[in-house]
Structure formats: C-alpha cells, structure tokens
Length: 160
Image (cartoon, rainbow, N blue to C red; front, side):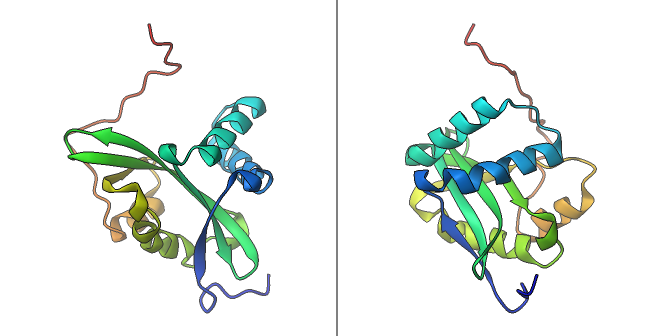
C-alpha cells in the first residue's frame, strides 16, 4: 500500500444506497472479525434499510486518498435521560492493512461534525471488556464507561 495515512488524512464519505456493494463486504468482514453471526440475506437487508433511511442513522466509508480503508455506522435513537436524540456508534471497522496508522483516531475526531445533522445529545458505543487498545482509543476520543450501568440485550426481540 503506497498511501501514507500519516500524511493523507482519512475522511468520512457518506454512504448512499448506491454504495451497498461497497459497504456490504466491509460489514461481512467486520462481522467475521467479531464473530457476529448473521445470515447474508439479513445482513444485506439491514444495510439496505440503513442506507435508504436517513432517519435511522448514517453510514460512512472511511477513505484515505482514493482507497477505502473501512467504514463506520451510527444508528440513532431517542433518550429521555439525555434529553433528545442519542445514537450508537454501532460499527467501526478498518481493514487489517489500515490498522495502527491513526485512522481510527481520525474517524473518531471527524464523527461529531459528520453527525451534526442528526442533532445528537449523546453518542454511545459498545467495546469488548478485554479490548484494551480500543478502550484506550475511545477514551482518548472522550468516551467514558458508565460504571453504574450494564448494557443488556434481548435478542431476538419478538415483541411478545
């Protein structure tokens, strides 16, 4: 790879429905990396729904020069506790060749401006307890653990 990420900044390029063919393999790679089990049809449908529904959040391709280094996704919700819209940094993934070059730090620094139109009061994320490098990265970007709370999930949620 002849692009130097230290001198060529990473930028976030908003993903549109026409970018599904680019986004989907990145999501598949991230899910494989994290051991997330989701069938390809469900994954493709979820990506299509997000890319086609701006009210749900945003997806961005992480570009370094002309190269796609990864992607990130922010999914929006609403919180009384935070007084308005909140969101999860649902996925942030860099392809292996782009890791350790400061790109994640650049992405996290660019997110507040990229999310401005979402009118967020808070941005949350989930990180593995044993992933110390990611926890340091997110901490340096201003994210703090909410020690009083534990994220709990009911999945699948069938509405019953």
